[in-house]
Amino acid sequence: MNRVLIVDDELMNRDVLKKVLGKEGFAVAEASNGEEAMALLDEVSCGLVLMDLMMPVMDGFETIAAIRRQERYRELPLVVITALNDPASLERAIALGADACIVKPFDLPLLVQTVRDALGGARA
Image (cartoon, rainbow, N blue to C red; front, top):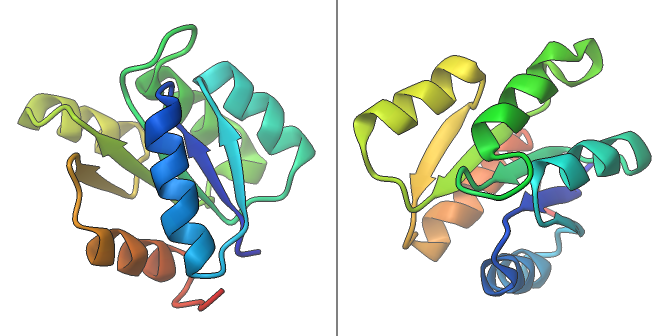
C-alpha cells in the first residue's frame, strides 16, 4: 500500500507534503493530531506515517507510542518530520518506535527518497 498518512497540526505543512507526494504518485491521507491519526489508521489502509511531534490533543510522542502498542501497527513504517532539532527529542521519538526523523525545513528530494525507502523502494 503506497498511501501515506500525514499527521501535522499545521495545514500548510500538510498541504506542502500532500502536493509533493501527490506529484510523485502517492495517495495521501491527513490528520491534524494524533487522535485523528489513530482513528484514520483504523479506517484507511496506510503504508507509511509521516508524523509531526508538536501537536495539540495528542502529540507525536504519544501517538508513536500508541501506534506501536497495537500489534497490527508494530511494523508500520513511521517517519517523524519535526521542527524540533534537539537530540533528546529525536532520540525519544526513535526510542518510542519512529523509524527515522527528518528535521524541518526538509530537503524535498530527501523526503521523497525516505518515503520510497520506507515503502520498500516502491514507486507510486
